[in-house]
Length: 174
Ligand SMILES: CC(C)(COP(=O)(O)OP(=O)(O)OC[C@H]1O[C@@H](n2cnc3c(N)ncnc32)[C@H](O)[C@@H]1OP(=O)(O)O)[C@@H](O)C(=O)NCCC(=O)NCCS
Image 1 (cartoon, rainbow, N blue to C red):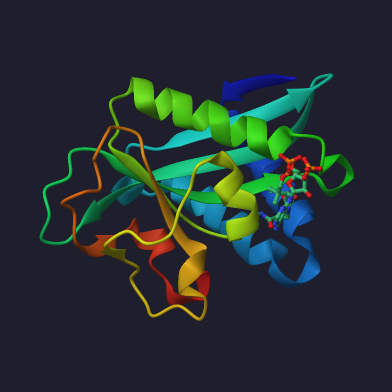
Image 2 (image 1 turned 180 degrees about the vertical axis):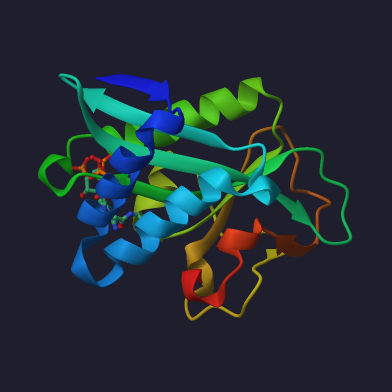
């Protein structure tokens, strides 16, 4: 499997991946979000990676920049969205995309990464709940709001509400 950063030419492929992975109900909205985030200046810097097998794009992950209101944060991200083609799920592609993304962000000197997702899945790659950064809206499942330090103690003294990119700040995504 090859993992590479995406370019402007990958937009259709990215849309298709998310629509396929998230299915009929959610697919269209998540696919739209992925594409909008890539064009959203308030999301910068972003990290967008695609996984390819035999020349076919089989997974995509996006990290976009966040800040924390009232706190001093140099560089932090939120992971959203992540998708693996339905036909290729369960073979390690999602995990590989997360781990590669975290490695690249660490090398960029990022401080931490947030995610809203299934704790059973994201705890496998080091995300934990119980930090002091609040989500933009009250959540039905607060334990799904997790974070991971990329630098030692990066979250220790950070408290406040997260500020995400405009396209990710719409209530439908929370
Ligand atoms: C969720 C998703 C990204 C995972 O990617 P993937 O490539 O299928 O996952 P991986 O192969 O890396 O990991 C699979 C492992 O995670 C486990 N897993 C998958 N989803 C899980 C969940 N929700 N809770 C706990 N474990 C989960 C699998 O049982 C499997 O375990 P095993 O390795 O012990 O067999 C992918 O299935 C997907 O695109 N799903 C639809 C879209 C979606 O829900 N995206 C995430 C939004 S937060």
